[in-house]
Amino acid sequence: MPNTFNHKIDTSPIIYQIRIKGHLGNQWKEWFSGLNIIPEDNGDTLLTGALIDQAALHGLLRKIRDLGLSLLSVNCVNTNLKDLSEQGPNENLDSNKNCHLENEIARIFLTHTQKDTKMKAIICTKYGSPDVFQLNEVEKPTPKDNEVLIRVYAASVTAADGMMRKGTPFIGRFFLGLMKPKNPIPGTGFAGEIQSVGKDVTLFKAGDQVFGESSTTFGTYAEYLCLPEDGLLLTKPANMTYAEAACVCDGPITSLSFLSDVAKIQRGQSVLVNAASGSLGTAAVQIAKHYGAEVTGVCSTTNLAMVKSLGADKVIDYTATNFTKTGHTYDIIFDTIGKSSFSHCKGALTQKGIYLSPVLNLPLLLRMLWTSKIGSKKAKFSATGLRPVAELRILLNELKVLIEAGKIKLVIDRCYRLEQTAEAHSYVEKGHKKGNVVITME
Ligand SMILES: NC(=O)c1ccc[n+]([C@@H]2O[C@H](COP(=O)([O-])OP(=O)(O)OC[C@H]3O[C@@H](n4cnc5c(N)ncnc54)[C@H](OP(=O)(O)O)[C@@H]3O)[C@@H](O)[C@H]2O)c1
Image (cartoon, rainbow, N blue to C red):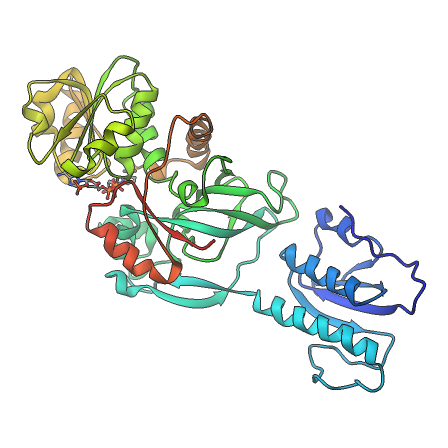
C-alpha cells in the first residue's frame, strides 16, 4: 500500500530531508510516493518532501524502521535547524516550537534506528567447551542484492552444533576454520521473518515467515541473519511454531535423506530405528511410517510411550533388551546415534539389509568400502549437510508438505534464551535430549 504523503497540504508544511543508507529498492518506492527519491552518488538515498504534521513524520519514520532500512539523518530544511543528528535537545526551541516538537520525534526514531544497526549475537572465537560462547552486540548484517535479511525468532541447538563448537573431528576444520571458527557466530538451523530483501530478490518479500538452514555459513545464534534467496530456506508451514520450524533441518531432513535417498526405503519393509527418541530418531520413526514401513523404535524406558505415540509399531527398551539379539531381522537398521556397528547388527539384517549410521568413524568407513564390493548386506553413511543446496531444498519441500499434512510433528524438549546458549549446548551434549532443543528469540 502506498503511503499517504502528498504535496497538497493546506496548513504550513515543513520540508524534510531524510537520508537512508543504501539505494532504495524498486519494491519500496511506492511506499514513499509523494516524496522525491534521490539516489546519491555515495550510495545513500535522500527522501525530500513536505510533511504536514508530527503524525506524518512519525508515520514516515516508523515505515522506514519497519522496512528494515537504516535511517542516517533527518533534516528540517525550511527552518534554520541543523542536522538533527548533530543538534542539541533544546536548540531552536524558541525560534520554531512546532518544528522542534516534530524534530524531537525524529530524534527518537533516529536514535532507535541507529540502535537498530546493532544486534545481539553469540560470538565464538575459539574451539572448546560451551564457555567459549559470549553474548555480544555486533553489527547487524546488510543483505546483498540477492539476499534476504531475516529476523531470527528461533535457532536449533543440535548434536552437530556441539561438534562444530569443539572443532571435532579435526577434518571438519577444513570447512569450519583450521585454528578458530571462520564465522564467529555459530548456529545453522533457524526460523524467523524476512525483514528486508536485496534489490534482485524475487522469491521472498518482507514479512514472509521462513525456516531453513544457513549451512556452512552459520550465523543463526543471532537476532538477524542474511541468506541468499536461493539458499536453504522456504516459507514456514503455518501449522508450526518458529521453535519447531527451526529444527526441521536437523533430524527431519537428515532422516529423510538417509531413509529415502541412501536406503531407498520401500513400502512394507521392516525398519528398526535406534535412539528413536532423539532428533533424528523421532523424525525417522514418522518418516518410515509415512513410507509404509513396519517400524520398531529402540529407546529407554522413559521414552517408550513417546516413541509409540509417533507411530512406531513396536518399541524395544534398550535398558532391558539388546535389539540385535531378539531373533528379528530388519531390511533397514538406522542407528541414528551410531552407538552400534555394522558387525553387531549384521545378524539382525535381512539378506539384502542396509545398516545406516549418521556418525562416521574408521570402522564404518572400512565397512562401507568392504560392503560396497562384497556381500549383499550394506553399511552406509552420508553427510546430509554437505549435499548440494538444490538437493536439500527438494528434501525440505517434501518435509514441508508432510508437515502441512500433519504427517510429521517436531518433538521439542527444551527452549532456551539466546543468553543461555552455553547452557543449551551443555544439555544437548549429555546425549539424553528428547527430540530437539531450541534457542528462542520471539
Ligand atoms: N551425517 C549427518 O548428516 C548428520 C546430520 C545430523 C546429525 N548427525 C549426527 O547424528 C547423531 C544423532 O543426533 P541426534 O540429534 O538425533 O541425537 P540426540 O537427539 O542427541 O540423541 C539422543 C537420544 O538418544 C537416546 N539414547 C542415548 N543412548 C542410547 C542408547 N544406547 N540406545 C538408544 N537410545 C539412546 C537418548 O535418550 P536416553 O538417554 O533417554 O536413552 C536421546 O533421546 C549425532 O551424532 C549427530 O552429530 C549426523
